[in-house]
Length: 407
Image (cartoon, rainbow, N blue to C red; front, side, top):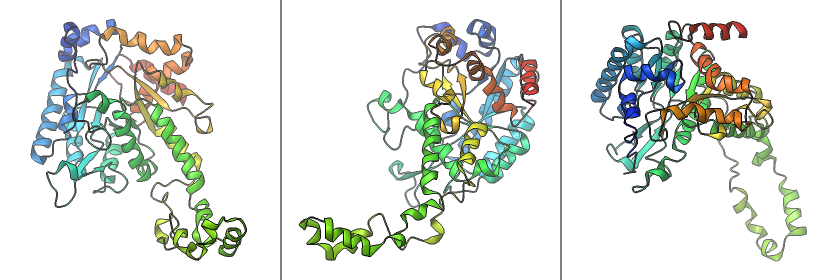
């Protein structure tokens, strides 16, 4: 068993602890904290979506969503609770999404991004699980869910952990497991959705990947572009074993090979198949087919138009999102401020905004970029699928002005 979070909430700062628990107290302190409207992502909801028992998981999600809707209804001009959508299969996700939108009136949603599934015949064996990212090679076809999101004007958002599998399985050290885990978890989701072609098939949707920062997103974009340039369906032929000039290779071995090579020249065929199998299945060669990608520009467009990245205030790497000098094709990724108040990484709620402002003080971003980080990109994420998302909130007029300026 991996060691997960412990001593993860404020205690010495009892006011902050209570603020994270009581909707009215949080509502009353928003001006002090410096937040106009807060979208509230649930901590308990993360564990609810990962419960293996189907009946219990669905009942817990329903209970959480009913609680969120009831507890925050009076404060909806400044506090918008985010519902939880379990995704062990698309049917359960669609059912809860329809209920939470139509019956409860919730607008924002956290989707289960990674489903840890047991290998057949090994149910209950935590060491025999594989990671399903809801896109590439998924157990289910989730397109009906993404279609439902488009129909209901919902932007899917994800907050996936990397703890409990791979290299983050220390039974003794939570810090070792926690470092980089949200970046790893959400990267797996984005990569699965991307190569499964979800973004290409549903260009009207906006997707958010939360609490892992944005540096990993910049790296992933660059890495995908680099792989595409060398391993697209045309350029992959550069590595086709059929294109090897065997006679020339044998001549070069004879002319330049030391005895340790020439003495074994008759075994050349044995080594040529290493990482170069001439019998590769023809229909597996185009690994970009499902993604719907035909150019580098297609990749950049998905990352800059459809993908949004939730960032902690104290992460200086947030600035990389806006660095047109190093991001592919001079692109900017849509980084978004997220306070994470209520957790151990925020010892004082009132210190979050000053930490974010350090991006300006340290001259890492411009004021316009900071405005996008704090407000613009959050507005674009949710209004990209639902132009009326912020209706009735304290920032309705500002959001409408932003949209008007961009049309």
